[in-house]
Length: 372
Image 1 (tube, rainbow, N blue to C red):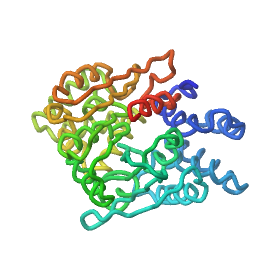
Image 2: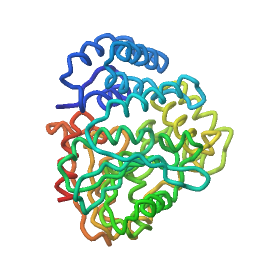
Image 3: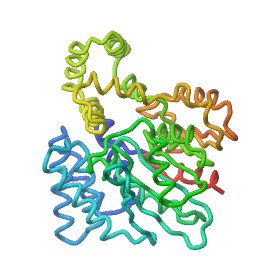
Image 4: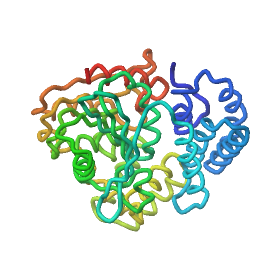
């Protein structure tokens, strides 16, 4: 397995690899569908139309597993205010649970403030350990549930939840919170966990570190992959000059000028537009300026010394969101960690991309070894 280049848009490539490579790389149905879909992907509107049309077709002929995946893909660039988004999400979730048979599980809505966090517990008979998993910026817990087929042979019960600003919790009105130890504490309390390992995926790699710094019932923490700061993704999406301008305007509270600059950048880049729009949806920020002010809270600076658990750091050498240098910085800052295991996946291995998209099994093999 390896990361495949489908289009000239790397964001499109990452998502196609993410949605279909893990389970459908050799599926002739998917190969046939991609031959029809990919040539017509030119913008976010065509992205939705192509995936949604194919989802409807697959649903109509009873290929519900594929239809679920395609509805998930179609939703990716849609605004939460778009009626098509709610329909695509509802179809994705409904068909997912109709076709999911990998694991015996229980579904629970965990009370949280005036709302609740959706969660799933995958049950392993006689398991004495627990692994708690959450994603990050754009995923749904059902995607994580599906990926747990890679961990079927570990002696752990696995609890997966959508936290504030994520998946089903976001659709219940819960916006992203910097104090991630609070939703983690809520999950630990609900499931009566005295200790457990946590695993954060993508942006969840940062959230996991934040939780581990302040919730000491966590005994191991896994960053799949590392994530140090939201501003890393901003820096990697822009030129050095533009990034410098953004920081200067932000630090000097030039609200109007910053908003105008960011909106211009959004109009020129599908990827950049999505990052900002998705961030605003997740946090409730109403302007790019307020979003970037909010995201100053999501940074590992000064967190490392508070983490005293066993830590697994995973990284891709060509991650399009996270500079590889961060893994070395994190290692230095984890001065009180019980143990640190770091793994960098490169191109020859096929795991060089963000969260090893294209060869996810590499990461899960490393995770299983760490949990053993």
